[in-house]
Length: 221
Image 1 (cartoon, rainbow, N blue to C red):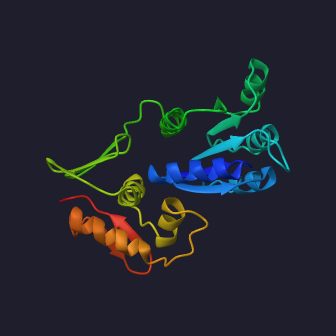
Image 2 (image 1 turned 90 degrees about the vertical axis):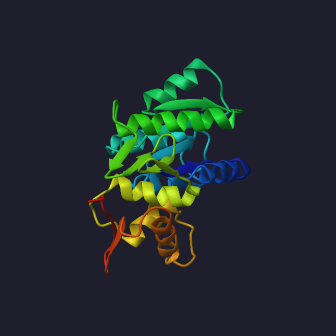
């Protein structure tokens, strides 16, 4: 999943980004309300972690502007304030959840997972089956036939993105955007490295290269 953190406490923001990246997410970080609104309005994020006390625009105004423009991205608000009025105001502007600082990182991750599950749709199964390939996006487990396959966080994220768009051609740029972050300036051929690793661990013909277009996840015959 691709997440946006809008938080002006830079040490906290970077700490959260490192932890969530280790969880397998692609994470972008900005420290200003106006920039946060601009990036969130692009519509490419699966969830926004939004502080309330921000320079430029506060979190309430960012959230209200996104909802007024029709964006339904889940928003988890963070604040140093503590009180029913503040929580109510945050939720009234359209936030999906609210967490008061200081908070447990474990609780933050649990809240994020809950919001992402809700976004996928109530009752929707997190288990995707394609031939003999089974990918559990909630438990982050992969099975090929009866055997479980161990993947790194990035390998899983690449496979997950292909699984969620199974049968479609997914471009290298699209994979980079959703699995890495906007600050990535390395070789875009890194995608080929991870696709090759997945082919070795799973099956050579599972991910097909569509020349000049990208990759497509194939189902087993």
